[in-house]
Image (cartoon, rainbow, N blue to C red; front, side):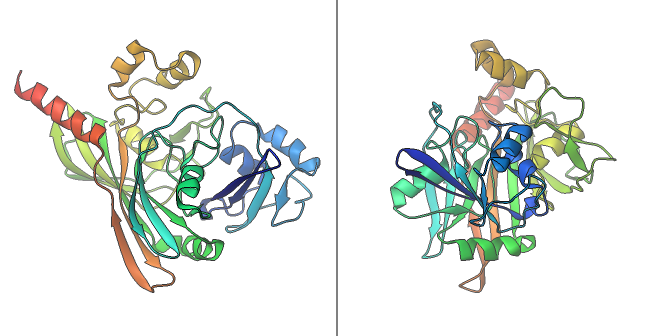
Length: 323
């Protein structure tokens, strides 16, 4: 969760620690959340007193953070890429707002993105502070829940085991099984040149479980629904890759492991776009069910399928029928 604002020309970033980061060292937490500095660089920032944890200096990079803690620091002035600012409000009350975001919209400040993030854009539009309760990758479209105050955000996060989510994804291949599961731990890929790339293998440190249901297949692709039981970083993408059904358009976990390196070194070329088949990962956060801490009732939010996923299915299905 982030509260981003500018003070005397300086960007001040506040980020709340999520349940999935509970117990992490603060330097590791910062390096994972804000990738434009390495872990050792964040250690220097901590030792120089530039980082505050719940309003006080953490003292040491070894200090562990807890879910609900607030980390504060001065951000950096960086040129930001343009984003797709289409955001639909699906539900709103005095405590919460549920949105459907586009497939080119970072939620949190990270790398070159700061003002061009969902939180900053919606804070400007709504004129209030907003705190994301959970995460979505920049290229993942669909439902995202934000709180209007830290107490509400904290209450939902502390009971996040009661939150259930489903996603839909277009994958390469015809999935034969109507239902299948991937119960394989996840960790950072020790053999990858990409620092944040993840891998599923039996000895990985983070337990992860995802249930899948095949909705239908078309022209060598399938539309699947994913039900993550755990909330690991990149979990659905990694588990689908592990199962042999990589997501269409996924640069990091797609058909070719070189896609991501080609993208970060040469940008989105015409050749790469043709090979990817979609300019972003075809993953959509479809539904979110959670217990409202103030209304004391279960809420169910559903985001419509975005145009790019609908068009891909329509075009490939027609192409298959015309063969």
